[in-house]
Every structure is written in C-alpha cells, then in structure tokens.
Amino acid sequence: AAFSLSAYAFGLVGFSFVKVLVPGYFSRQDARTPVKIGVIAVVFNIVANIALVVPMMRSNFVAPHMGLALATSMSAWLNAALLWRGLRRAGVMPVMPGWPKVLLQVAVATTTMGVVLYLFKGATSEWVVWSLNERVGRLAMLIVGGIVIYFGMLGLLGVRPKILRHPQSEEPSLDP
Image 1: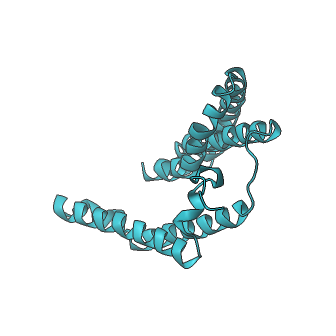
Image 2: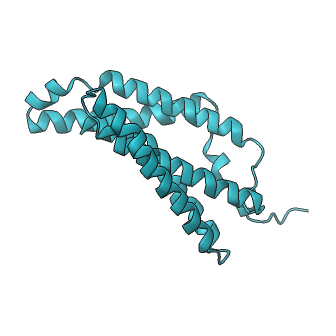
C-alpha cells in the first residue's frame, strides 16, 4: 500500500489543479472542452497502465500495482496541463508577474518538508509494533512538524500571505 500511496501523492497537486481549473471552463459555458480533455487523460491513463505495469510484472517488481497509481497520477498532471493550456490560450488565465518565483519557492518548501518528513517518519517495522497511542502521537508530531517546516520554509524564502491576494480584490482607496 505504501508504494501506491507514494505514487498517488505524486499526482495530488495535479488532481487539485483539475478541480480548480475545470470551473474556469464551466463559468464560460464550455462543458465540452473539459470532457474532451478528460477523455484524452483517460486514454493516456490506459496506455500508461499497460506501459508501466507490464514491465514491472516482468521484472518481478515487488509492487507492480504501483504502476496503476503512477499512471493515474501522470494522467492527472496531463489533464491539468491541458486544461491550463486551454485557459491560457483563451486569455482567461494570464500569468501574473512573480508567479514563477512563487512557484519555485513553494516547490523548495514542499521538497524540504517532504525530505524532512521522510527522514523522521521511521521504518514501517517500527510503526507495526507501536501501540495505537504511540502511532497517533508520532503521526500528530509528523503532521504538525510538516506544517511548521513548510510554512517556516516559505517564510525563510520570503513568501508572505499578502501575495495570495488578487490585486483587484483590494478595497478601493478613498485617498486622492
């Protein structure tokens, strides 16, 4: 199960992007394009399933089912990329100045958090022998630690909450 969950984790942001981008089409009364892109992603998923699982099985990989999860994650990223491209071409999703820098900062913070959590998670054999209270405590510590590391890294990299505000969402000033 750990192999599959790791492969699904790779696609988590892609799945999220799809959920965010699809309403951009629906709000423009365009339900066809996301469906067409979804069909492309499903076909890609089927091909990727075969391309990943068959070699894994032939090479006696310990968890060939991971290929199914990885193919699904890859198709989520493809789906998100195609949706993004379509909205960009339509002029609906312009890239704001500073986005590349913020995306890099988020990527560094996310990678740092992931590496630290991986190093402190402990071996599966330890988790199996721990009591329920020990597992819950360790998991809570990892969750809180992950949050602190992620937002701490963002702060160290110069990311401030104000960048999340859309420039047009501010109240108009009454000053001349």
